[in-house]
Length: 119
Image 1 (tube, rainbow, N blue to C red):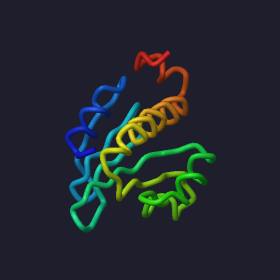
Image 2: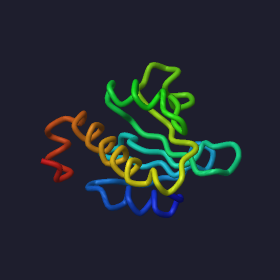
Image 3: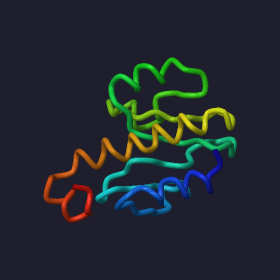
Image 4: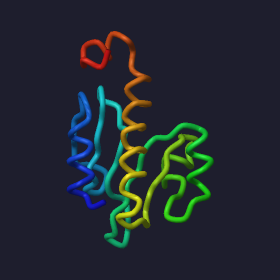
């Protein structure tokens, strides 16, 4: 997945917003909370960072092309970075980005979820 496809996918999810920050990274939020980041790779190769469940964090931490997200995981957050993957991994990345959106949206207050049309 390239950054354009990443941005298109994130934009298609409900109640999202986009900002460019943190070293010119594409940062996607739902309800003001980050759920995905495109960027943070020093060699200009695509890298995508997303929140995961505890189970997927443990699983993906051991998979080639994935690692605990720099900065976030070292602070105890369950975030993974996909940093080395080809087109065969696009479906998996789509799943994990969509799941990250769901996890972050579910953590919003019920009132905020209603305001955003997520309930």
